[in-house]
Length: 532
RNA sequence: GCGGGCGUAGCUCAAUGGCUAGAGCACCUGCCUUCCAAGCAGGAUGUUGUGGGUUCGAGUCCCAUCGCCCGCUCCA
Image 1: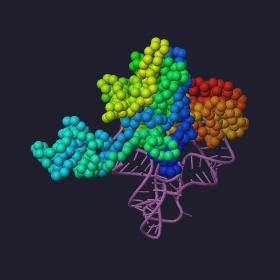
Image 2: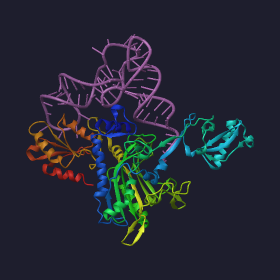
Image 3: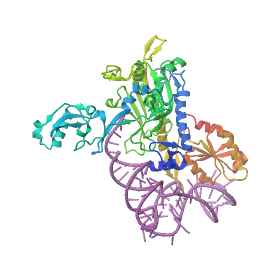
């Protein structure tokens, strides 16, 4: 299925528009139109209902170690800057980059290193991206080439230092960049920030610098104590949040898949360390199931467990739920959701200071001065279980879903073109009724003989409880096709027979079947269609 | 960030540097219409992505810029 057609339908029918389009658009930002906003709201509401408000904490679900509670949260987008230092985002997302004017390549300033070499009466810095033995070899080869010497003249090279970081180099005019043939092709280091920087207070200045959150999860961790103290939740329990996040993606691409402003649906699930592996597996499988329940085909949806080498420094298990988007090459998948076992990394980091892995354990990362690199809050974020009088940092399972990515996957999955009688091709969005933007359309078969009045009466009676549309424009077939493109599961037509026996035509979007349904059954039928 | 391609009506596309930028579909109004984009009559639709330049004359040629797509890079 071609992505172009899906994008075109989204634009034409009002699912998605480029942001600020009349001014030429803005790369990495998108707007949801009238149909799109309903679709995305339905996705978010299905998630919130299935994960939070509809959760039964009294009953133990089969396959889980225990019953559990779920509560929600909605925290501010701008938080104390220290949050992002302790979470690791500041270090991970905040780099200085240097560009090579000759090779057009870009490097992280702190990742380049090299050796000083005496050459032609001056000192030059032969740089490399690799360290260790490999780096020594590489700088040697490059030095020979740069000086136009033969391999057997290796012994004549006059090295003035071992491998040192580019950070120690002040004068870039004597640096040979890793892919350059001449000196001084690197630009000055430029700040490269994947987090959106902003300023709190009317007066711009570094002391007011802050960041738009790159994820919603940290708001949950920093409110962990507040929630525990205010709600009587006991482990195991989860805190959920839906909200906007912001990342300065280098290459926004693939429609809304990689946007700079996006919405997340995240859960931090706090449990006893002994049970965390069991919970991790259960959440992973449950979240996969959620997507298939809402219509994503298992043929296009995979649950991919990360290789140990792929894992973040703190994680002891991560799985991605990935969808075979039409814009990806055959056999490739794009991430919809990550389910990570984060252990006690976050709570401890916000208490003690940013942690790093030391062998199998996590310790506070120290700066050059021997003090914590990023100081924590110092607040006790341990959980005290007064049922067994035990104090501990709960381990955390984090199912983190992209609302826009999920919505995009549902759009791609729903899109279908199929031949119909008469050689025509019909375009239909086969949304699960729960997420369909419009639940039912109401038509009078013709605009006379009391049909419009009867149809409007039905429309008004349903409008309060369901997203329904009224349409009396053009021929009936045209109206059906219009609703097919919007993904409306049911069209209800008031016709001549309605006037005599009080039944309507109930037309199914996918099968095109028409049945007669008594007026009084309409609401019940719609309701059962929308059951989870 | 680099390289390539593209940008004309809501959509698909025309228009040799030269007349008022057209056609089909879709859309709107009316008529007609008893079930899957039917018919008839009429109607509206454009700063040719944007800004400069060359030219008597630019949708067409040049430059810049924005956006989209593809590949690389980057990121994870």
